[in-house]
Length: 281
Image 1 (cartoon, rainbow, N blue to C red):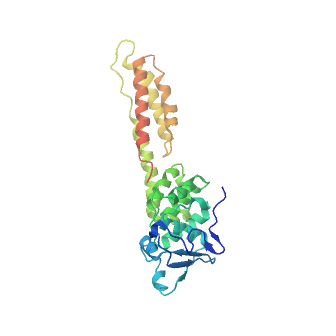
Image 2 (cartoon, helix red, strand yellow):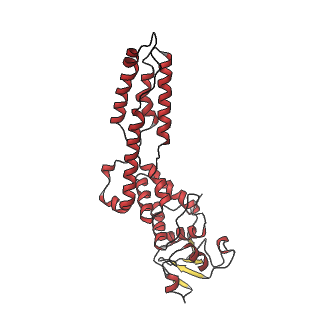
Image 3 (cartoon, helix red, strand yellow):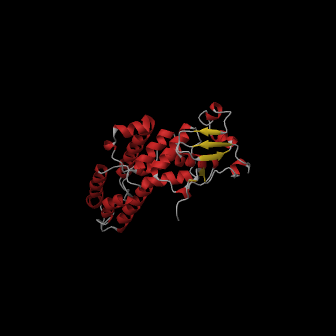
């Protein structure tokens, strides 16, 4: 399906002069916003004042006697911002990342409330993490605009980020608070993994055919070696499959069925606990 055009003949397709939208209780628009590329968006002062905490950047006060308010945003960015303010779905317009970035930054300037995780704009912004470099871009944008829910959601996609590769430019974009939260996420998960895997399996009391020496040789020593490998490889994005690959062979070193079952159960407990470790900032 072709993207819906933002404007036709210089007038917004969604915010025309006769648009009667649910957010405005079906009332006709009372003012027009004119974008930097001369597209007119017919809107409702009451809706925008309700959505903005700075009187729409003070424009309503500065141009109180004008029916046409000229703003610095281009039509695609203004369209995104207004769709968010009105609770409308921006997806049919299929905005690219540049448009989404400009629209989100405009929302910050005009103090439009951030999208919530149930809003279409939030979903569309978060989908950008799958682009090359997209997770860092989304996280930085969310940090700059103080869209905390979006930053939290994006942070899960930065677990594989090499912190030593962070540039000064990106760190500046994110700001000290969100950089610190990301570092703490990485360090916290790495330390949690080391703690979780360090616990040795609890084995049964020695009996004939499975003595303490045999348990040491077949289970506990190999386990310690496998754990040492895991700790050396510890990072915040270690998958459960790697944990199982390193530890599972230990379960099959002993001819004792009960020892094998206890080790396997311990591995399952480890992967479950690792899955439960907080994976967002």
